Image (cartoon, rainbow over all chains, first blue to last red; front, side):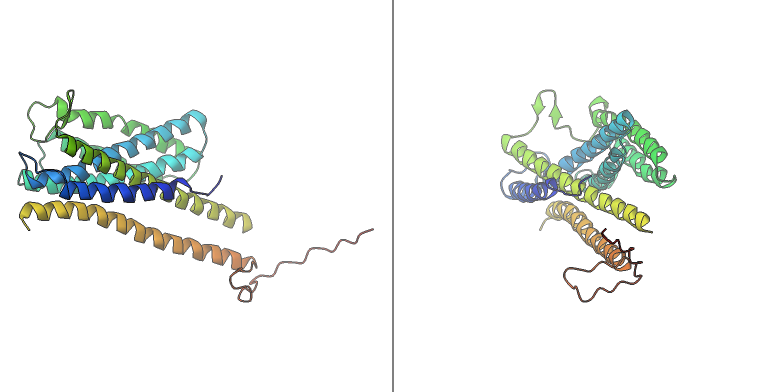
Length: 227
Length: 70
C-alpha cells in the first residue's frame, strides 16, 4: 500500500482559500439577520461544522460496511480515521452551538431541545467507539467489532438531523425546509463557500491523519520484521 | 466591540484554535516517527544520507559467506 498522499495538500489549499473567503464574506459582505442581528454569523461556521461531522460519521460507516463486505483490513484504518475526524468536528459543533445558544437564548445548553440532545447522544456514541476499539487486541476481530459499532451509529444521523423538523415545540432555528433555504442569496452563497471550506478542511485532516496512522502501522510492522 | 461581536469572534477562534492544536500535535507525532525511523536505521547499521560519517552500526551483522565463482 502506498504511503503517498496527493489529495491532502490539494484539500488543504482548498480549505485555506475557501475558509479565508468564507470568513471574509461572513464578516464583511452578508447583511445582518433581521431577527438575530450580528450573532447570526455563527451560522456560517456552526452549520458547516455540524454537517461535516455528520459526513465524517457517514464516511466512517461506509468504510465499515466496505470492511464487513470485502474483509479487506485497510478499510478498518479508514473507518477509524473518519470516526476520529467526526468526533473532532462534533466537539466543534457542540462548542460553537453553545456559544450561539448563549447569545440567542441566554443559556449555554438546553436539555429540552431534541436537536441538541440527539447530537450529544450521537457524539457520545462515537466517543465510546474508541473505548471499544482499545479494549480489544488489534486484529480482524477488533476490526469487525469496530465496523459493526460504526454502522450502528450511522442510524442516529438521520434521527438527529430530522429531530428538529419532527419536533413541534422548538427554539432551534430551521433554515433548510422543503421550500429550500430560508435566507437571502448572499447568505446562502456565503454558507456554501464556508461549507466547501470546512469539507475541504475535513478532507485534508482525514488524509493527513490516515497517512500518519499508516506510517505508524508500517513502522511497527518493519520493527517486528527486523526484530 | 459589542457582546454579540465578541461571542461570534470567539466561535470562529475556537475552530481556528482546534485546527492549530491539531497541527501542533501532528508535528510532535512526526518528530516521534522520525526519531523511531532513526533508531531503527541506527540499530540496523543504515547510514543517514545527510550525515554519512555520523552513522555507526550499533550491532554489526555477520558478514555473509563469500561465494567463490567456479
